[in-house]
Length: 214
Ligand code: ATP
Ligand code: MG
Image 1 (tube, rainbow, N blue to C red):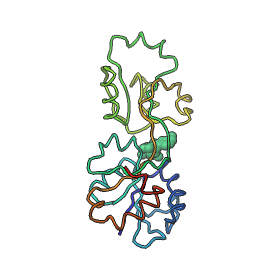
Image 2: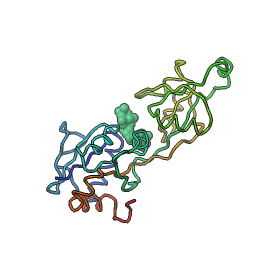
Image 3: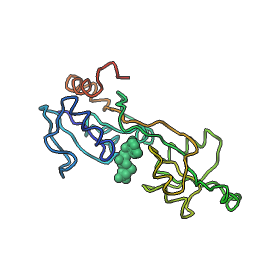
Image 4: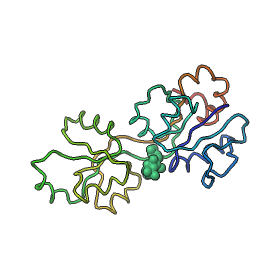
């Protein structure tokens, strides 16, 4: 049995056509079903649908042999015990630092305090700020980062941006590029050794060719 873990949300939407092109057709409509484990048209290949941030954990412990996860999630996780096999080129966006459009008006008010940055990506943000030599307090949030500057919780946010419309709707603008994000195919390291013959065709189908492997 080969188990492939998929991230709910944005990545799932873009994974379904990729799976179908690869000839891996889910037995149920993944957008509608309440089931968390779904078989596919390929005997012995099943899908599990989980929160994006949980994909590295399932794959690390071998509960899933393969997974599709954003580079944002993989970097934040650290990727221990995982092979990053191929960039699937789906769910592309950018991780950006954003600040209020009228920051200059507010700057004076906070100039004697440390910069506060709200984000879901604490590790990536810590590393990014340290590399710039910037001292800041990082505030860990689980979502709706755009709200934080509006209510005085933070001066800046680090969040995913695609069109920039959500930022603009909340009076924010992207100011620095942290990371280009897309979804990657990852594998459990032990499974790549013990179950390679079973995984190989699935990897080949999803990654286009094994030449994409790193
Ligand atoms: P929720 O938003 O419901 O709290 P989540 O943040 O875990 O859940 P998504 O927003 O669907 O789920 O994000 C999952 C993954 O999809 C992200 O880790 C990222 O790799 C990718 N992603 C997120 N937002 C975008 C976007 N605007 N454009 C493209 N890909 C995105
Ligand atoms: Mg989200």
